[in-house]
Length: 372
Image (tube, rainbow, N blue to C red; front, side, top):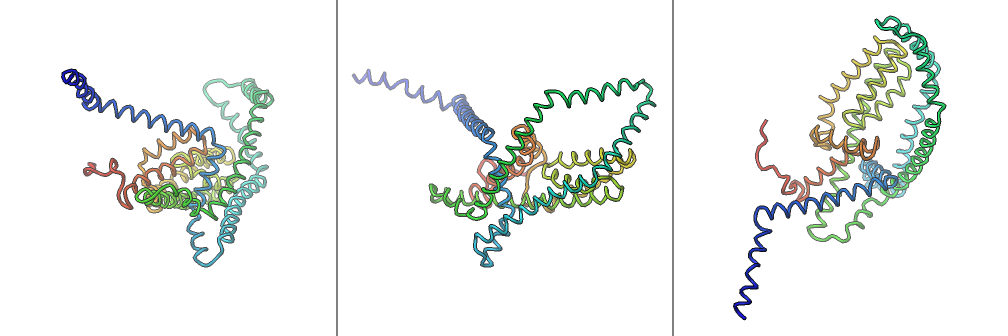
């Protein structure tokens, strides 16, 4: 019997060794990594399917974080929480509504001039095409125009218009939801966070408190810093467009301000749009001057203003920003491009306070000096 028991116990060290040698450790880590990736993919899939809910909530959180210092100041002055909330919410709605009204008013007031300039520019383009070394006759130009007309009157364009109506309805629904969620974040944000932290105690509770504070600081700093930089870009480029006499200088400046919230590519896209308007309305020389103004303003902002304003709120390498921007665009379009970088900054900030106010998570601690 004892011999049989010894025979029964013999395979146990071998089985234990299969999972504790180098190959077994690698297999275990691989299974753990695949499980984490699967869970992350499931979360991303769920978020994309619930984008109509999640995007307004995230935008509301970002806006609430940006305006949190004002809320804290009003509460410190003795204002009731509900009154401070209404003041902050109405201020945000007035600013956003004012920007929208400004764009519409400027476009309507200068639209006729832009159409006339575009007609003249199209005529000049036709004349220029006639000077090229290869032949482009009137029939080819008319065929191109007829192709555009046929597309505008086709069923494909009609289905696109219906999709645009559906997107508008979704946008309005998300906007209403965002305003409602923003109201409660401003009014009861700290209480809501404490409610979510009820399951945590001890070290886990302290860590969750640090994560909440870091998230608010990072999002708020990012929005306020980006808004400051965007305002400088919009004012600089707007003044240059007004001096040159480019139509729609005011709405183009507002577009520069809005696209500045998309890092790297936003300012470039706005500059291309401004140059195209100048090309159509004022000619190629004015377009080249606009390109020079955009490049100059972006260089001054990127080399002098951005390192000072964004140093504390966005400590991400340009490559990380580019990858986050690409992933956000793929998953959420333009809205994903706007939200990707602040979300990445929050994730990096959470890692930085994981084990303490100045103690990042163990795998992310610097082990050796970085070589240049």
